[in-house]
Length: 106
Image 1 (cartoon, rainbow, N blue to C red):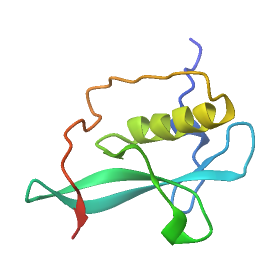
Image 2 (cartoon, one colour; image 1 turned 45 degrees about the vertical axis):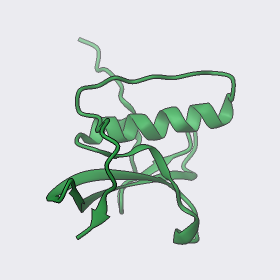
Image 3 (cartoon, helix red, strand yellow; image 1 turned 90 degrees about the horizontal axis):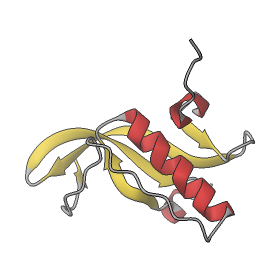
Image 4 (tube, rainbow, N blue to C red; image 1 turned 90 degrees about the vertical axis):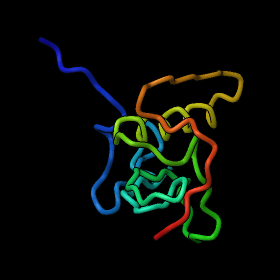
């Protein structure tokens, strides 16, 4: 049986660096973080654009994901959208946080 590829398979060690597709150049950073959502402490995968200056990093997609696979897919789709601006992508996986609450670090 053939192994199914997923964007999570391209993550590089350290703080989970998602590379620009087809390269080893950093594109996004995925971290497991503790946040507060609706007043409750939770842990989520946070996805931000890579930049040498942390102040210039931006959340990708919904920003916080329950599953690593969803976080990596968000980074992958953002990378593809950046390289092909007229392509639309959607993902409705059940683990993606769709609520519009504001997360704050604990």
